[in-house]
Length: 325
Ligand SMILES: Cc1cc2nc3c(=O)[nH]c(=O)nc-3n(C[C@H](O)[C@H](O)[C@H](O)COP(=O)(O)O)c2cc1C
Image 1: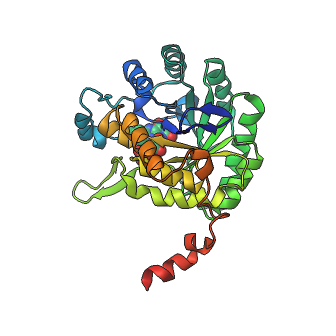
Image 2: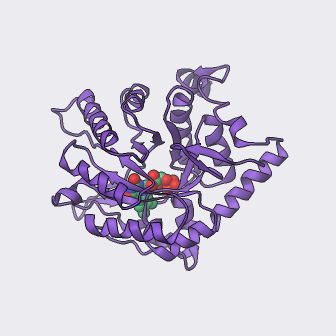
């Protein structure tokens, strides 16, 4: 059974990647993830504001997910505060020395500027790739969608000019013209597109008059949005495609692959069940493929993409009408 894939130009034995977040914070956990078969690891993000030294208001993750760590037995990364730029580099070096799998660093920012030169330091510290998380709240009424997109494309161009390692861009799902934006990033040289960011959940405490930010863990119901985005891009961009959000089971990975994904990232599932879940998901993929007589993931990749299904409208407007029948 051949699960191999190529993501960002790197040959991987299978598509199961540990996504950006606290899973890479602790060296013992990182080793456990490698032992359990992770194909690649993405470290948590370092934020533009952390590099420029600006005040960050509540950018670190709320602990709403802490309860579910208990289910993962002793695999319970403490929710940690974000690392500063120097600590981040040091941590990256340590992780690289601890494991053999490719390790990606992650930067989160919105404005082109001096902080981007930091990407070079990540490369020098040994990162095998860089994931750029270009999340923009876009609540500034003076900025158009085109302005926001231009900034992101400029960031990618500038980073690509200075780095040799591959660069993946992690996108938010809320874009006016998603496919066009993806094509611009592709043309700017992005080696991969990661679909899609999950937002913090916002609620209002109407007694204390506070905005409450939580980050609950996902489940597989988050996947369809990503399948649709991936299916729309598969075969139409040079960049590799990865899905983040809602990958919990072997069937989720099969669906992601059929939509066109080269890699699938997991965070919530591993926080909930621990690193051994990587083995479980891999077994599920293999037994499903055996049962349905698929020899490799490569032969099914993108077979249900927008370009290749007989009824592309199923992904788009017609879907609504049919669902209401
Ligand atoms: C506790 C926690 C911390 C996270 N930290 C980051 C981060 O630093 N950078 C980032 O790009 N995504 C971060 N994410 C988002 C994940 O990488 C991932 O995109 C999201 O959780 C959806 O995947 P999942 O359904 O497998 O959890 C974080 C998610 C969680 C739950």
